[in-house]
Amino acid sequence: MNAKVEAPSFRLDGLKWLLVILLVAAGVVGNAYFSDYSLLYRVLGLVVVGALAVFVAINTAKGAALWVLLRESQTEVRKVVWPTRQETNQTTLIVVAVVLLMAILLWLLDGLLGWLASLIIG
Image (cartoon, rainbow, N blue to C red; front, side):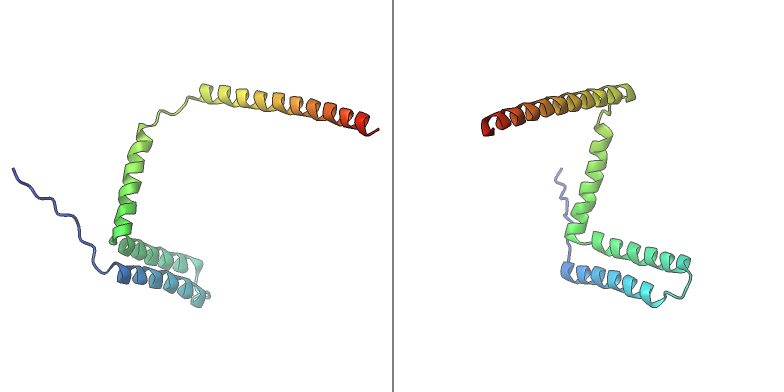
């Protein structure tokens, strides 16, 4: 079996990114221009323009690579073994106890060094 897998070719990426920038700019300017209209209509228009910009961006090489990265990271997040509520509470209490202990030790050390400095200075 000799199967060739063709990598997708991305043509005119610079032009596509320019189109994405123009779409975002058109959304911003259109939102300001149509400020007298209902917020609902402006938000719906921005959602449509944003979805179109994302669609064009994903059809570029960098956009496709970002999409692959997002899918792979979602797969990795599913593999994570998250701590239970009890483990989280215990770890939090240990961290709080260590922080309080270190704060007290540093406060005592500061007081001791301050006292020694006042003895030396006079």
